Length: 106
Image (cartoon, rainbow, N blue to C red; front, side):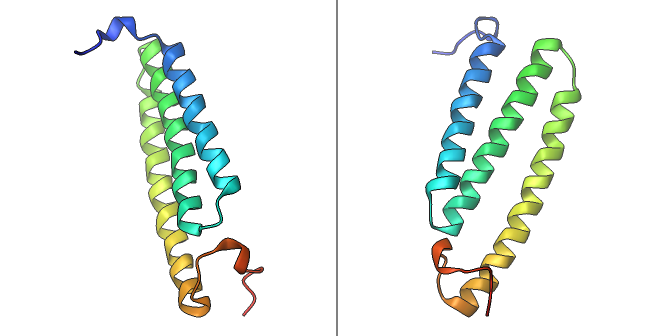
């Protein structure tokens, strides 16, 4: 059963984005695995995208959607750079636990 679009208020989307951002922030602060931390950062960026699109939808503008596309591009670049650094660390340290990596000293 689908929900009509008019019954979904932007406040509901903002509250969901807040919960999504809180889960991402808690995961980024509490996780020790580098891949999980990167995934939690992506969750926080998706929460920001959700807010941008919700506000653009509420004001009937497209600027928020354009900014959301830019955030998706930045997130893709962040993942590419983060995974490249992570692969280098794994090759040298053979571990992806963040507490075992000390200032990237070799």
